[in-house]
Image 1 (spheres, helix red, strand yellow):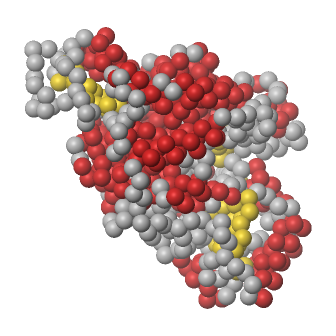
Image 2 (tube, rainbow, N blue to C red; image 1 turned 135 degrees about the horizontal axis):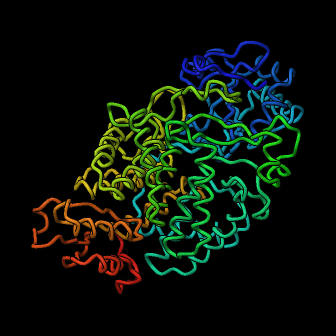
Image 3 (cartoon, one colour; image 1 turned 45 degrees about the vertical axis):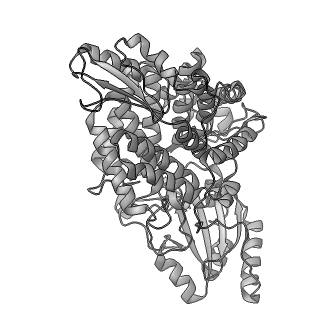
Length: 599
């Protein structure tokens, strides 16, 4: 039942039902929910993505079953969502990933949800129970349904929130022996704590997990398998772009802190894979490499083979969709890899991808489009409905903003700074709640359940806080604080639990304060460039490195750097060799302080 979708069909936003003897999947839209209510029909939600083996299994074995098709089409309005094309909906159902299966009454009240695939018989049992419950009027609201928007902003001090999230993260990593590797923020948070406070326990937990994930790398073609189960070497044979981005980011930070060659090798491993298998002709990156082959060989056995033997069985298919949010994560990863290793090719890769992303997807209002159909996608056989509606999503803007800021810090090119400012203004104008603060995951499209996702708000807060420092724009910094207070409600933090890495990063950076490395001097002067290079080489996730116009600091006989935050500034620094030592004084482990005071 896998569909080969023509490019023109994708471009029509795929809002119509599918023809033939298939489930009549509908788009997630106000009209679809309205139809369900008008017709008094139950609602079935299926959320997943192309790189998901369990999603493919359910499509091929359950959603193609004639009895399942008949039950669904006769009793439900069926909605299918690609979680990568619609990150707002993907985030909402990530607790049940992947595939996420949810059932609603006609009024869109969720009554049941479960994670993972089901074979036809057990799935039909669930369908019949929901159908019978609806007929009897006994369906009750699911207490674990996605949480809504908090009506009162969180009032606790950020240091208090930070300590709560630290405890959550410590619980994640203290006995970790395997796991999903799709985001880097949680590991980067542990490394940041060691950097700021000399937290050796945080470093030990980070290294133990990083060393474990090394066993998930493909030694032949390169690339990080997205998950392991029970033990690190027991991998799921899927390679997803977000796992490659997470590897670049986390191992770049680890290498810069420890200088251990194995972490640099991990960066090179993933770069080899990305540039060989997932990079498009335009320099952006495809979503994933699936675990399906025309050959009957088991995928675990396949990946145990060498290059020649693998190719004799064929190469696993590529999902040629290009999603902006994950590409932004890859761009940030390559910038961090450049900063850690000094290898220009990594920065060149990041620059090429970012230029294409801006040229193709930044709108006149500043925000970036998440997905656009391209020529390479037209021949793909897909299992999920795609939509290419040009609307702003929070996750796209937050991670794109962080990528743009990293490029500006690494290069000093005004292009990136200007694009970041435009993006921030577009974000504020389209997704911010002007009353309570914080950002919605997507625009108001008239569908139920719109909310302010915790992790995406945290990423946006980190971006806006640092941009506010750079631009001397209080409105950006205020929006950052409001985003955390609006999204980090007790119920949201409790429900997200372990998935709070972005919140942890944002709180550490904001409570410890930015580190601004400003150089006053002629940009063409080699001494100015030497100071800038020294600042860019410093490991400091809170840093902003740039040339400062005269006026804020005095113009001296020679180019000089000033390192500042809200609490202190250094004397002018003329010698690049002194920059690392002076920058280190802005960590609490070297400043003589134990921890920042409450905000």
